[in-house]
Image (tube, rainbow, N blue to C red; front, side):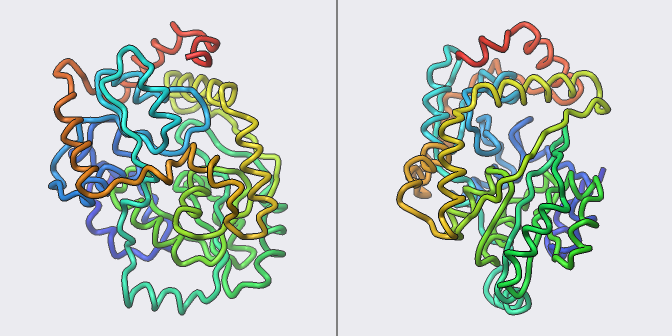
Length: 350
């Protein structure tokens, strides 16, 4: 475990193995809320000191379902921050909630890591750039799809661009999947390890360097690209998710229950509508899908610096002294026990 992260600031985005080394920055965030450096970006945006701990559970990305991820389940006594009104309303209806705040796409609050001359130099190097977000694996499981078929599709689309760049998730770097994309001559970059405080800053720059973005599954990166004004196209593929059984029984149980409940309670019609809209968008951001995109990313909920600061201070006021924070394995063990006591139908109906 590498506990230092400041020295990663100047690492080239293509040095994917260095950027994917596990990192611990837990001193700067509340347990289960420090993923992707979202908390750091929010604090910088509204002028809080980096050592300040936001007294809220922060959802880590887009969620199409009514499922409550493990952080909320364990930290029910904390206020919650999320992107969309859809999720805000769900949490506000929970009897144990201590406040819920939708603030729009988190990437809006992150400063790009590449600025001015550094950005211009990198953009000139890449030229016209097709950016690809493969459906990514997670701590608890791996994605399964034909990378060869995907690369063939990418190559066809990439013929009109100077560069094709793959934005590869750290877990898939760890799995060695970069070698498949490199065989096709694609550039491979990464935003870094999931607890890298500069993940979101790095991801913003990677997106801003692109001219068109594509993926084989809709996800948070799809919405982030659209928010930053980059057209996004979905390439339809059969993508499956395999639960890993090697990370300990509690992590496996959490991953399996979470994935199953999320999929079953997802708003399938909305997801298909978004996919079809992006599939037919021909690389344009259409008015047809803006409302449904707002439902899940909260593009109309972006806060000013003053309003976000007020929200964080309100979270401080609503913060319960009885809340508690646990770290693995106690965190996973406790959550697994909770999941056992709650049926899937209850999770879906909540």
